[in-house]
Length: 259
Image 1 (cartoon, rainbow, N blue to C red):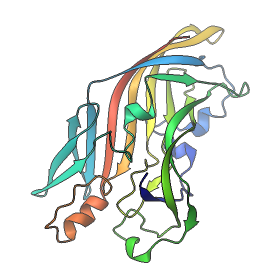
Image 2 (cartoon, helix red, strand yellow; image 1 turned 180 degrees about the horizontal axis):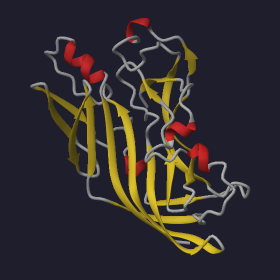
Image 3 (tube, helix red, strand yellow; image 1 turned 90 degrees about the vertical axis):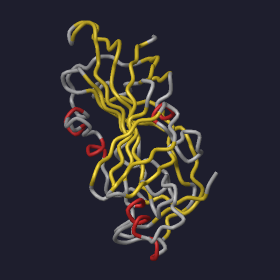
């Protein structure tokens, strides 16, 4: 494991995570209306590529790689920036690793049938909350407000993820990331990471409403600094742009309920 740094996530709330397509979970999480039954094991198939968006200096660039990632180079204002997006890196969790080929959903709260849970791979810090190094935070860094950081080992663990089914029972969204990157070296997923899928169902709200299949995308969002391949001749300006970049991995999926 590598020694990395995580910012405490104190201001990001769950409703803000669930706005992938504009339907905030603050509405459906407390709905008592019927919802299709997603409970059970689902078999997942992925597209054969990762779509990559690199937002740097306020400009978004697009690229694609194979499902296991790779080196991606984009040209920004005449300067090449190369990012190491290989999924084999210990500190990287690619979309298909976050959401494996077999997943199990639960709907544990009978009062609120639109709520769903599943276990996902997440990264957690085993250290303590401490004040950041003031030379590595502030304006122009991924920790602009110099919030307390957790200084310790980052471990990949299995944790509960929460999501909702929309009011119509036609799609679901599940939040994945609950970390923020700091100091240009931490690759913990940012809060915008999520699964978003359309649902195919049988039956209806009055008779055995079952979700049977889904198509959508799995998205993982990272800070750019942790994946930037440094330029030995960098004068500092390029590094500042790379550290402030945001990278979005996305891969499409299709899934069917196995039982």
